[in-house]
Image 1: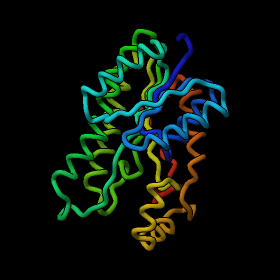
Image 2: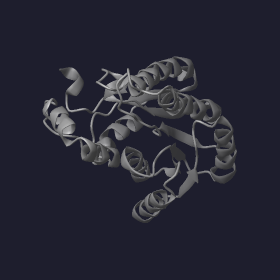
Image 3: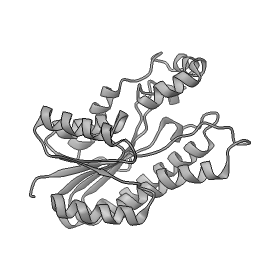
Image 4: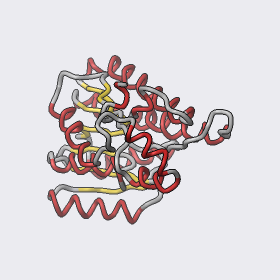
Length: 249
């Protein structure tokens, strides 16, 4: 149980799975969490184990439930030990709904998962990094966390909060040699992207044409950002946004 390991929440598909793949490529054992899609998590687990020869564990977790996070914390230490080097807070939920129509429950659910879940995971795992005097925390923000979009009141609120949390954590944890940064993706071709395309293809076409590079990102393009944060020990409190220039204009 002495190998370095990482945790990626919400890694059964999409960007989370891509991030887990890059960590496995870099030689980290990986714990991937999922909320409901056990079959997809198992598929990711088998692919990474076969391709990279690292240890991969999957765990069902509702990150907005603090007691569940505490139970996960206990399981992780018993299963993989204390050499946690990378924590990626990727799990999140999304809704696109105008401010005058959104239900209070929808708003609160998004805040509970995206903001409180990120806090619970960081708060209850950071002691392992502090003890090792080393760690990297990567939070998933969003281009909508840099500039709000129509219908994004809940999601934008949560991702603007993640930006603030990232900076505050970077300040507080820097003295322990822990770097805290965020990735703020624009539109990438994930399952969520294609689901949204089925609902409103015209909206996605419009957004794509509003991007200077005139396209959505490939999931594999996430590898480069993760590798950058892993390689650098002198960057913290920063947000890198692979979004094709969307927030530039």
